[in-house]
Length: 167
Image (cartoon, rainbow, N blue to C red; front, side):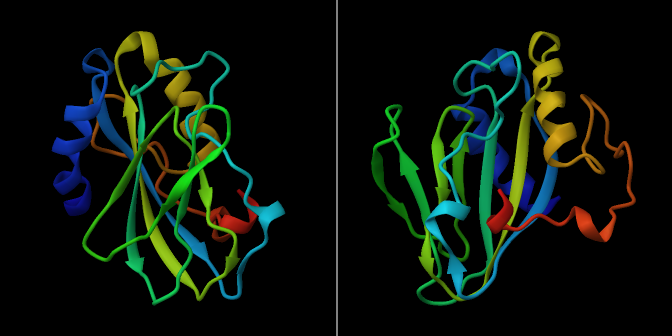
């Protein structure tokens, strides 16, 4: 949990105060060489739920673990889905996106790169149902419920590893 402890203060400071943000899940995001085609990495927002969460109520923090030169970055879009730019991952730095930030893996040629994806969910009762809906979909075998330190299920099947190609 060391990485999550390092980035939590910055994420909590940016978050909606009443969200009661907590680190709830983590996964690895692997983009394999030769990279991703445009159609396989659609722009999306994390934390899309049946009952939408307010802006800054949840965050995904992407931390590069294996990042060769010329590896794909993170494309960010505005609210009209127009490209705003590409952020380059740097070892030792994290990129945080809130639940209303549209983004995707930069398509094109890329060597294999690996990110840790940390999920900070709102645990306030009025937001938890929506957050849990997303967690059950994205990390169904391992996530924390509010105020707990043990996972619901600690066995992660081999086919649970997600890759950018199947976002």
